[in-house]
Image 1 (cartoon, rainbow over the protein chains, first blue to last red):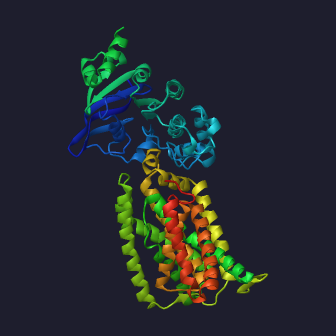
Image 2 (cartoon, rainbow over the protein chains, first blue to last red; image 1 turned 30 degrees about the vertical axis):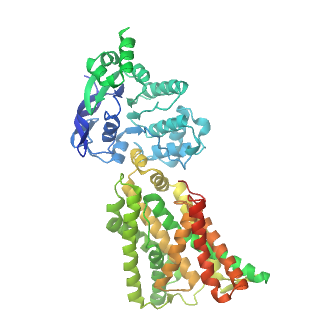
Length: 256
Length: 306
């Protein structure tokens, strides 16, 4: 039997009359990298916000490690082992890189049981893991966008999560930075055993790294499967027809 | 101009500035962390001052011990004010800042008026204080030509001490780090496991606790207080918070010192060039000229970020 870490059942989130997430169900297997894609406004970030407890859904259930976490406050969900990085980076700008990561360690999974010294150790390890070791004592506000994104990953990892949600971790990066970040994401998954869901617009990246893909369109799940299956799914191609070249590129790449 | 008069005024402005700076810490914390514009700041300062004076006059309690009582009363008042008045306004993560600032401003304005009237009624607006009580064996110490009241000197030293203590609390402790995280981004803080509601309540307790404790310093400085004393310290507090930068403890202290020294200097200059009678009100108003200049030319303040 497949070990499921996160189970979404008919999750629905409305904003007034707009249904941002519409009866979405899928499961995330422990240890996998799952790609969550879809055109702009598909509901990907909203779904992340429902999983992490920033929004309460109007319908459906979110089950994490067998526990119903639907509607639980964000800070409690974080302590259960779900971490997230933000589409628009939100480091604590007036703190150093190391201090940012320490916050993750102090209030993460071992919150209350971890001392200052140990939190500093964990934080330093994660800061080095993402490659920011030399900037540990810089203020977060002094970092480049790429470094801020790495810092968000370090802060998230310092909480020692089992599930990491990456919201467009690659957006705005140049090709070399994207390659580096992809390597890092793989190492987080393989070396640390962290399950990852990534929302991503950089298609070739997510198609390369994710084992499975879920496609959202206007809040509904329209496809799920391996990158090949999804890329050849007529409904997905139709969804992306607002951007036909993109859809055709998938088909060519995967069909070849 | 007599150099010693200049020196006396600068030194006394410097010491008063330390008191002003520490008195503004609570204001800058509440505003910086949870966007609460505390219009009741002056009355909450007096809460500590009145408590100390009352305990001293009624029970003969040493004001130094009374200061600890004021701190405890302030902390308790902070928790009560948070749950009774502020939680509904600031307890959620996703409300727009501007709305929070307006609604808390009005809420704290109501508290301000209520406390002012309670104080006026209870004290019949008569001065309350600790009389001739002073720290140490003598009430005055001399440094060359400059004579300094022991109470003023002690207030300034204590102010510096409290500022350092609050700074260390915010930078070295777990709760302190969480307060700074919530101040910078409360949603990101929640997502790393910090309970923003708990932290906001702690902030209210810390801020109002320090404010009530600062009432002790105001008492040392003014020797007696009336309800109207609130209207001298609260506006100066706002000037200092804007000058120092929202949420900055260091900024608050340095801002206080700057305002104090500017006040001392203007007093001498006005007395010399115009009239000694007008020197105090005119010197006070220079603080507000600084407010205007900061808002126009450096709206983020000395140590702030915007």
